[in-house]
Structures are given as C-alpha cells and as structure tokens.
Amino acid sequence: MAVKCSVSNWLISNPSHRRRRNDVQWARSHHGELVLAEQGADPFDQRAENPDGRSWHGGHGRTESSGPARELGVGWKCRPYVTVEPGETVVLADITGPGAIQSMWFGGTIMDRAFHSAHLLGGPDAAVCGVPAHRLLRRAFQFSRSALPTQGPATQISSLPVAVNPTRSLNCFWEMPFRQRARITIENRNPVRKAACFYQVNYCLTEVPEQAGYFHAQFRRRNPLPYKEEYVILDGVQGWGHYVARPRGWSINNNGWWGEGEIKFFIDGDGSFPPSVAPAPKTTSAVLTTSTGTANTTEYTTLYLGMHQVLRPDGAHQSQHRHAMYRWHVVDPIVFQQDLRATIQALGWRKEGRYYPGQHDICSVAYWYQTCRAAPFPTLGDRDYLEVV
Image (cartoon, rainbow, N blue to C red; front, side, top):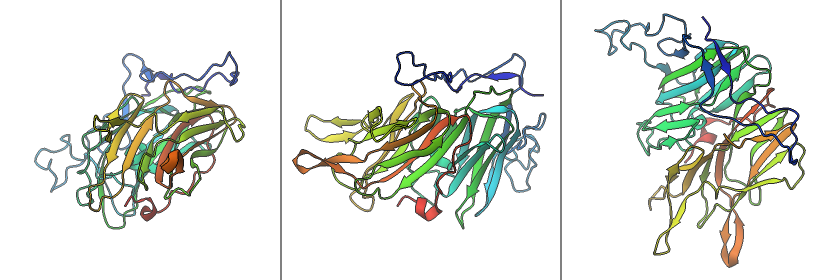
C-alpha cells in the first residue's frame, strides 16, 4: 500500500516572480514540514535487510553460518550491511514512483573519495547526483587512517538538512522528489579494498506537484586553482529552480589569512558583474584573535552554516591547513528562472596591504533544485585525482 502523503517542501517559486523588483516573491522552504503522512499510513524504507522495501520483509535477511546472528536466526540483524567489493557498483535503493525520498542514513567503511554515490531521480529527464559518498554528506576530508577508515579526526555536523554524528553516522534530510523512478548506487573505485556499507533510505509514495523541483548535487575540484582564476562552484545550469547549498573544502597552499574572497551568483543572463556578491568564506569561517594577538581558527556547526572541520599542520608531514565549511540556503534560496552560474575567489593577503590570489586545493558540492534535468556534469576523475594527500 502506498503511503498517502503530500510533498510540501522544496517547491519552486511562483513563475511570475521577477528579480530586482519591489514585489519579488522568492522561493521559501520550511524544513521540517517536508512530507505530511495521513494518520495510519505506513512508512517505506530500503536497507540491507529489506533491499526492495517490501511490506512484511523487514529483518528477513538470511543467517550466515559464521555471522553474529548464527545462533539467533532470522529476524536478529542477520544482514545489517552490504559488502561493496573492489570495482563493484551496488544498488542500494530502486524505487518505482511517484514519490519522494525523505531521509537517508549511511555508515560503515565508505568514508573516502574512492566510494562514489549516484542518485537517479525520475525518468528520462531525471536529475543526477554523482559525488564521492562522504562528500554528499558534507565530509570534505575523509578519515585519515586508511587501515581503520572509521577512525581518525571525527567531525560532527549539527545542521538542519545534514547531520554527521560521531563517528560514522551520515544523515541527509534533503527531500528528493521523483516522478517515475529513484535509484541510488554506491561504487567502489578502490582496486583492492572492499568495504561495508550500512544504509537506510526512507521515502513515501505520493503524487508529486508539477512545480516540484528535482534535487541535484554536483562535485567539483581544482588542485591547484590557477593564479588569478576564480573557482567555479556551478556552471551550465539552464532552466527554472533554486540553489540551496554551497559546502566547500579548502586546502591552503600559502601562509597567512586566506578567506577574503567573494562568492558571485550570475543569475538569468547576468554579465561580468552580478548583483549578488557575498563575502565568503569569511562569513562561514571562525577566526578568533587572542589577547596576545595570535589568530586561532575555531570549529563550529549551526543550523544553516558552519566551519565543522579544521586540519592543522603538525610540524612534520601534515603540512597544510585544511578547512571544511557549509552554508545552507534553506530560508534564503538563490532563485533563477533561466540560468545560474556560481563562482568564488581564493583571496588572501600579501605584503604592503595587497590582496593575494591564492592557488589552493578547493573542492565543493553544489546542491540545487530545478524542474528539469541539468546539463551533463563534469567528469569526476579517477580515485588518484580525487585523493587528498
């Protein structure tokens, strides 16, 4: 039986709105009012113990002779995860719509850039999300010990749409409507190491309003960013929708302060100088000056923005400052009707009070909703290119 509910969040704004007018009506979203289930409706989920989400099949995983449930039998957590072999792509969820994914949880030993998550939402014009698995859930820099991938510098995020809890619980609450089909896979690009993937995908089956936008997530990286070039967060987006997030990872390749750059949104045919320019990453960094004049960076996490991860040089072989930050445009989405491009500057200080265009290692995942499928995404690159060293 399908869950009777209504997709009420992440709807695209009234198409009659126009920017730069006093009567602008921006798309507004109220996270927490996502899908309202009618009384008595049963939720659906797909996970390792019930991979197709069928009713009466939760906990039906078979007992293995050497597994921890071998003495207890069926119904006692016999298959809590799936094993992803080297070079293998595993389907985590395959759902026939229409409906909406409401939340996802991932855990296990998939916390590096060799593991890629791909989401296909809809039909032939569906949205595509193709990112390293831990990057979709806002881990810019993976756990550091390859022999024990779930141990390392634990990073907690306590935000509204994403929660990363100690030490390997990745939770996503971005709503993802789909009209025909939703398919989620994970790919292991490591040629020698297999991994355990714990997961749960929660969803409902319901009619999706015509104006509801598909969720998109696109990963990019430049290492290093060429001198005097702006980093491109998102480009080539055509259609009608709104941009909702700009999480970034920033590895610093020079001394001194690095966060003076501005982010620019080129909306609906904007030329070289867009109207939307913000001082970022300064708005999300947290640099405190002590009484002795020493500057210290402090990690923090809030509902809509944070700098949740700072890796500091250790005086030996850990030589770079690395910062991970996020900004969720939940209550202030960037709305576009025709096209969208977003860039950010790597800008610090040099002597004589002058700006220095940095040449850093920068990565990002852009999140946005739009009513049609986006243009083809940039190639992710192989696992060696994506590795942070």
